Length: 547
Image 1 (cartoon, rainbow, N blue to C red):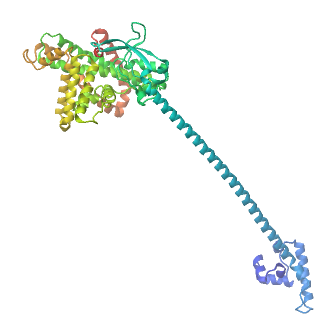
Image 2 (image 1 turned 90 degrees about the vertical axis):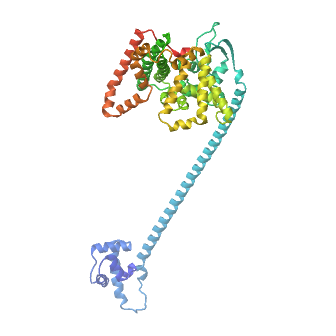
Image 3 (image 1 turned 30 degrees about the horizontal axis):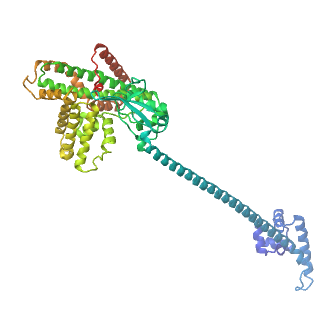
């Protein structure tokens, strides 16, 4: 049996998990294998159990026949005994060959799939490269076309609109210009900042007051406005039309096409408008009444003149900043965002800082369109000072065609030049004296600014430093006592203190909840107070009409 399997007795016993003695007994016919072992043998031979039993019987007969012949004679059944072994080997070889063939076929199919996948990726990359090349070519062609068009537009910009000056009144400083705009100019090329003064001139053509020409399109800072309704919307934007802030076309060009509206923005705009209206009606108008009382006095004392100077300085601040707040609030309601125009200028420690906080939009306008184009401070020192005096001469002339405005502008030019020469370094070292210096300079400047003529300005300045009529006087004492609360509220309101207290209170848990109730009630109270002021009194001056 072991010989038929091609194994030794020890190997066969190990395969069948039996002892070597059991295998020896099976071969000698002393015992028969169990059924389970026959099954294992049949699997090992690759033949059925019946064939195995017949093979066992034949092996026994062969063993008996072999005993009667010479030991060297080969057994005639040897070839028959090796047949199962050969069949098993053939089956194993065929199975191994089939497995190798299957692996080879699978590997070939996988390689073919990968090759096709790589070919597709290469084709996709080639198409992407061609698309990028085509896109770059079209973009380069578009840029070249835009540059060529811009050069052609810049060469003919001044010839793209016709206008005639209808009237130039130097006293009122108004220049009424009647425009006959060509359609192409309006739709394609021109983006200027205009402020509407009247809707029609004496001959019925559209008339506007030319406040400034911002050729931002020409300078390449903003794209041309191609929508004529959007251009008209910008020209006639009423929230900032009269009193500022000066809104540049480039600042709101995107919002002319697309604006966002929400209840939160509406409420913030309404709050800002209400605060600005209260600053104008309650504080500025009340301080204006004090100034009017001083001007009506036949012989005001020195204290009355100083108090009037303080009153006018606060009045012009709350008047201008109030109108700016109302314009910013209305803009917020309509979806526009205007820049801040005042930032507590009376806390400044130098005149340079003062003009960075006062009428910010006007200062930046002259800086960008006059000072920097003239060379700014990147020139020699004499030319630098010339640039400063030129800018402030034009600033004074911008407010009015009168000598007191010119002197007012040049007064600040002198102070700024002194600060550039070294005074600014000394001011930065101090704490109290710089504030006193700025407040004193601003008071003197606004006395000059408030006068109707240079002669009246000199008279008012002399009254401030003259003691011929006494320093205080009964009339001055009466009005100062009557308006003391207004002076106190205005002085506190011109500093960041109220805003800091509000933010500090809102930062607390109780304050945040309380403001949900207190803030609307306060705004309603302010509106009612403003209504009472407007209906009770007829004094409601508008300072900007003078400029």
